[in-house]
Image 1: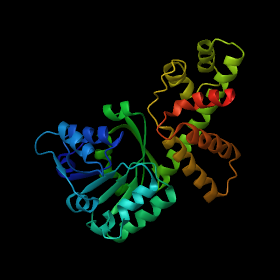
Image 2: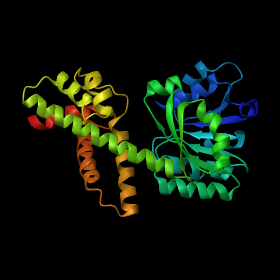
Image 3: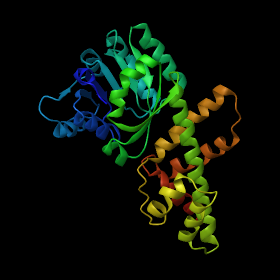
Image 4: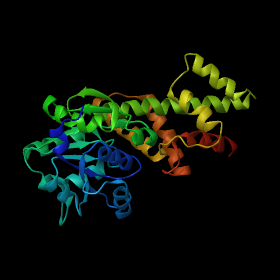
Length: 306
């Protein structure tokens, strides 16, 4: 339950994209006061439309967010973007330079674990703290505040972050030290991507055999081949041809690259991961990063016809 003390803290929010926008709205709906920043002014204007008077302030820079917030949520598309926002650039101060002692930064995107650990050390040098809390779930779950959230960091930082996280998520899972949540998120998404790819290939072979693909989906879901792709993507988004699962192909490939970085760091050969990365990379080149992740099925079909 969110305490009055926590609600009295001002939460900074940077990154009002497809997921960040509904997450910020959940915070507003739970009584938090926000200082928000996004590189796209239209995203800020959209959030303002949903905010009650006196609950939302707009910042001109990430550094301004740091100067006016007690807790800062980052919902940014990649680790390089997080690093740029945190460290700034020539003539553009970043969050780190403006952090006040006692500030808590929560990186809720899908960043590279090693970079997360490095930024946490830099924040600690300024008397602040950084934890990683990536999310799992669709835009629909972000709107409903029912995301699954993994959280890596020490006990004190997590205790402070928890009320903020609970305003946006239904399931909060402690993963260990800082960086562990980003690692687990990347590994989870690798397993999902591999399952979706295998499912799409099975559907392609089933179609070539003139099987009833709806019944094939039922068999998979009643048998050992069941996975989240067979349960939530086949009938809903692939067989209908809508391809609207709610997660972009480019983001999927980015998470696979993060998993690849983990494989390199740990010395694990991960041959299945290498193959999966190669196929998703070709799909990205063919149909673009904005395509839905379920369109890996459409890519495989087009490849078979060429």
